[in-house]
Amino acid sequence: MHKKECEECFAEEEGIEFISNQPTRKHELRKQKTNFSASTYLWLRIAMENILYREWVPAGKFVKTIVGFVFLLALFMLVTSVWVSISIQNPFFTVIMVFPLTFLLIFYGNYRGIQIRITSNELIIRYGLLNRKHIHMANIVSCEPTKANLRKYLGVGIRYGTDDSWAYSTSFGNAVKIIQLKGIPFVFSSNNPDKICSIISRMKHLTKV
Image (cartoon, rainbow, N blue to C red):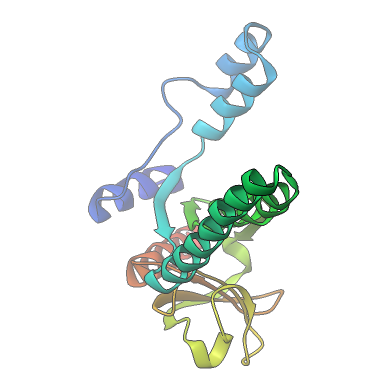
């Protein structure tokens, strides 16, 4: 059985969304490239990847509680500043308070969750706009469920653990630990760590077939 056929059978067995290279083939896409904008062509190329698994891991209750409290406090201070500015007819206090409130909203929007994708070739973890991790299947030694606990990472977000691992975490709950052939261990939050490790193990096995 060919590798592509194995991947499709595996995806069907696991109930995983599998996007195969259909109906548009690469050579057909090249012929039509002149009719597409650059962004449309890039989107179509990405859509042609064999995506075996997708997951969105939102920020945990702890993060939401802290951000919510700080946001309400900043909002209260903003309203107070507006009232003071109107009273003294000077917008200085309002302008000052707008900046931290805007920063808080952007910060939460950027780190509101982790996006996980597994293709036939690599594991892709995205956390915010600037933090993206690509790990090729050939570079994965092992995968195991773990916990992104407070004692080890002293918080949530992008953290360096006491066990010399690098983590993208949204809570202190379930996570996946990837041991790499090259690079330090990498940990990321997930609601389905066992399923992710199962997919990675099977894909690593297929690459050896």
